[in-house]
Length: 193
Length: 121
Image (tube, rainbow over all chains, first blue to last red; front, side, top):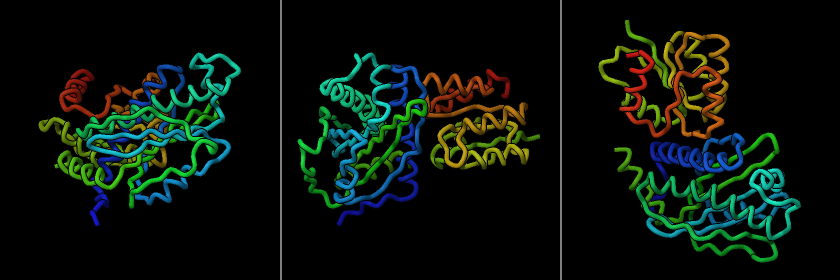
C-alpha cells in the first residue's frame, strides 16, 4: 500500500497552489463576461472510486463534463456546472438565444475548457509536473453508464466558482490517481524544503 | 519603535512567504491571522498599523476586512496579497481603500519595491 496521505504542510501547500490556479481560471472567464466571480476555498479529500461515482450521480439541475489528463500526473477533471444561470452566461458569452442542444453542449464544453484547463495547468506548472489535458466530453445519463475507474484511492482537489447575480455555479474537481499522488507529494516536499 | 504588522492569510505557506519577503532591516513586530475575523481582531488590538491581507479566507473574507477597516481604521495601511486577480476584484479592492494589490505567488522584490513606493521603508 502506497502512502498517499498528505501531511498538513503538503495539504496546505496544495491548497494554496489551487487557490492561485483558480484565480487564474476566474480571471480568464471574468475577462470574457465582465462579471466578478466568487472563489471558494479549495478543499482536498482522499476518496474511493465510489465517492467519485457519487459525485457524478446525475442530478437534473447540473451539467457534467469530464476530461482526462496524462503525463507526470494523471487523472481526470470533472466539471459540474449548474443549469441555472447558463442562459445568462450564454448571453454574456455572445451565444444566440434561445440555446439549442448543440449550442448548450458547446457552452458547457467551453466553460469546462476555460475553468478546468486553467485549474489543471496552473497546478501542474506550480508543481513542475507536466500533464496534457484531453478534450472534454459531456456526460449524460443516456450516453454513459458509470465510468469505470480502476483506482483504489484518489485525491480530490475541488474548487467552486460562483456568480451571485444570476445564481450560476461551477465545481471543478481534479481527481489524481494513486501513482500521481506519490509524484505530487515528492514535488510538494521539494517546494516546501 | 517597531511597527506592528499583521499577515492575514489562511495558508501557512503563504504567511511564511510574506514573512520571508519582509525586508530584514525593517523594524516591525509581526503577528499572524488565519481568517478575516482574526485580521479584524488584530487591527482592533493595535497589532496592524500595516496589514498584509489575503482575499479568499474563511469566516470573513478579505473584502469584509477591507470594509471594516475603511469604516473604522482609516490609518491602517492595507496591502492586499491575493490570487484573485480578476479585474473587478482588483477594482473593488482599490475602491475599498487598499494601498496596493500584489499578485500571488508573492515575489520578495516586488514587496520591497511596493514598500518603498508607499513610503513605508
